[in-house]
Length: 206
Image (cartoon, rainbow, N blue to C red; front, side):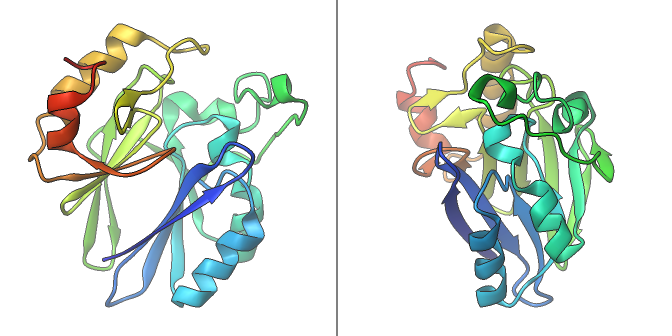
């Protein structure tokens, strides 16, 4: 498995390039800005993007979706509950920072339990609402990409429209902290961590 992280945009959201080593089929996860840099990494790795996956619909995770799609023709995927956020600057919060990002509709809607294939890799969709209604995590092998659901030592904000703190904590406890302790967590911002570490020390889920 190939996995590279690229902090992008004004808020340094983590964009991930995930690919199968054998087939070079790849996914771009959360292209929130700096499309040119993302394309450079794809070219350097010599991978072929099949999917552009949005873990949720906030602007710092979606802003470069259209640009990356134009360069790669990859399929844009987002959970159905966040689909409208791609085109609505009020709902994706870009209107509040003066950018008014309005993107094309997704090619496909994701749901809890969906499996996406990248060569020999199987990507499992885990829906955990609370940061946004359609927030998802992506589980592949011993790794989980958590978007803005779970961070090292913290959890996502729940004070945006569609947020729900109790729902977020419940989902993290039931769907993430039950994964094997050595599962590596790659969040939407900041450093990676381990499920074991968060289970023991994250004050928001004790």
